[in-house]
Image (cartoon, rainbow, N blue to C red; front, side, top):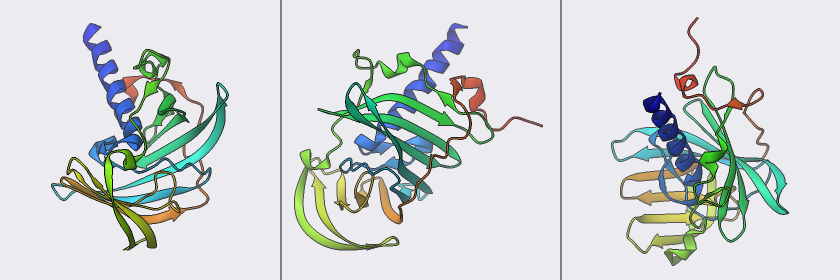
Length: 220
């Protein structure tokens, strides 16, 4: 039983880190990079990226804002991430930093599951605290450039990470993270589509998190 609880806690931790990926360039769900730009939430707006890892593996990932609600008097936005058939959304509140207050995920063929509240208390203040969502605080502004990607041509601001980890081109016309293109040491991201009518892809009423339901669709 102890081993089972440890496994469940570990899975929850990884999922929470993946959900926080919109605030930092790192590894998100299923090993794909997640964009770090500036949080630009517009309900119904989203973006799709082709992400390529250092080993050449390519993954398509969609980020979208599918809802908005008030959380303790502040605006909270439901950001949904879809990749490899998996759907995950977090309720993110923006104040002095981004805070994830709820998280729901759904595997193919399974009901949606909501993460336990204790996993949302990682900063000891009732929510999961993420690093700054604004790339401009840790990067050098190289200047404005016109960038053409599969989604079109955008006038972008080019930022180069001060730690040498990569270059990112951002545009206020892209929601929710503003990223048009990213070129890093171990990964690349290219915007392939801009979405203006994003809808929530979570189907059904969420049930409590159960790690045994993460094994894919039920066997017939």
